[in-house]
Image (cartoon, rainbow, N blue to C red):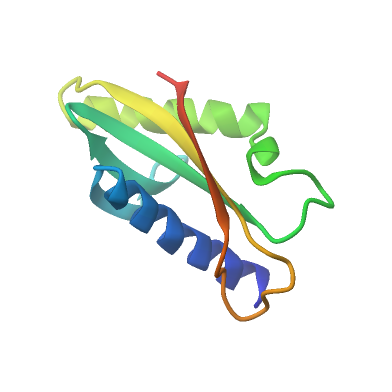
Length: 121
């Protein structure tokens, strides 16, 4: 699997996971000025901007460790845009980290999913 394919497969797993815990998926890969929202969801009465990070190896750290200060700034700006577009609706930012088995070349079967809620509110 190429890195881009791993990322796409991770986003599919993240969507399935979020739906399984009661989130409503509103959109995926939404390009807003200054960045892209991997997943936009609703959790009860809160809109959630979800950043998905997928890795097949911890050689460069766990997936959630790849969220840099610059990425947090971008996510904050995206959350602000989402809130403004939705008339000031409450928005938070979550991270879903997908850690796949490096030996699984064709799929992300058996991947471990971590959900970090409220990275930014």
